[in-house]
Length: 238
Length: 119
Image 1 (cartoon, rainbow over the protein chains, first blue to last red):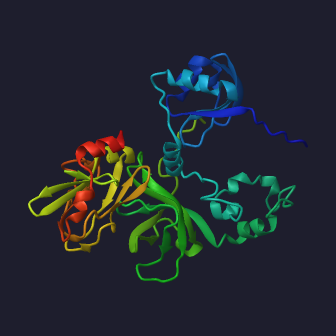
Image 2: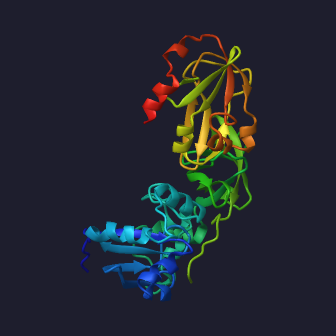
Image 3: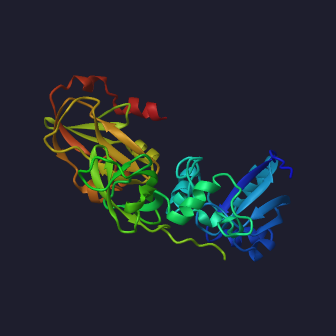
C-alpha cells in the first residue's frame, strides 16, 4: 500500500442546522448526503471533496478544496445570511459539549481506546474472537482491558458551581483526601449547555455516573460529579 | 478616574477607591461567565492577583492596583457575571479598597492616555 500526503488542499468546515440549506444551494447533491458520506461537489466553480461530518456534534460538512481557492470559497459561503465565521474557541466549546476528544489533551500516545471510551473504533474482526483478532499496535493491553476493564476511564464531569474547571485541574474523592484519583483534560464554559462542563480521566472505582468528586481550583476543593457524555445531544444527519 | 495598563479603572469615592475593568477589556474577554472576588477584610498588596475572571474564551487575573484593605465587593457579580460585559464602568465594578498608600495613583493613566493605549 502506498500513502501519498496531500499538501496542496485546505479544509473548511460548514457546521450547524442551516449547513444543508446553504451548501445545497451551491450544489444540490449536498442535500442527499448522510452523516459520514463523502462526495465530490462543485461549489462556486471549485471542485470540492466533501464529507458530511465535522467536529462540533452538529450536522454539517467538511470541505476540502485546492488551497489557492479556499479563501474565495470561504468568502462565497460567508456571503450567505446564515453563515458566520467561527474560530477555534467556538469549535472547542462545541466539541467539548459533544463529548468529543481533542488529541494531545483528552487522548495521546499513552491512552488506550478502552480508557478513552473509543472502542467503537476497533473493528469487530480485530477484537478477541474475531477472524483477524489482534496483530495491531497495543493489541495485548487493549485485549486485556476489553476483558477486565481499564484502570481509569474518560468521563464527563459537571462542576456544581459556576466556576469553570479547565484542563489540568486535579480530582479527589473527597474534600480532605490526599491522593488524587484523576485529572481534567478539557474543560470550560458550555454556552449551549449554559454552564461549566468538563471531561477527564478518573480511576475506575470513581467513574460511575453520579459519583461526587472534588476538583482543586486555586487551592480550594470544589464539588463536581461524573456525568454522561455528551452534554448536548448530537444532531447528525443519520 | 485613573486607568492601569492591566485595563482596570480606578474611581475615587470618598477615601475609598472603586475598581473595575474597562469596557475595552470586557469586550476583548468576550462573554464573562464567572467572577471570583476577594473577601471583605482582606489586606492586599499592589500586584497581588485578587480577582479571577472567566470568560467563554479564557481565565484571567486582575491585580490589586494599590496596597490596602478590601472593604466591599460587588456580590451581584456572583449570580450575574455578565454585568461586567453589559456595564463594565458602573454596575460591573469589582471591589472597593481602602488604600494605605495612594502614591501609585500618580503613575496611572488618565482617560486620554488610556484611550491612546487602546487605540
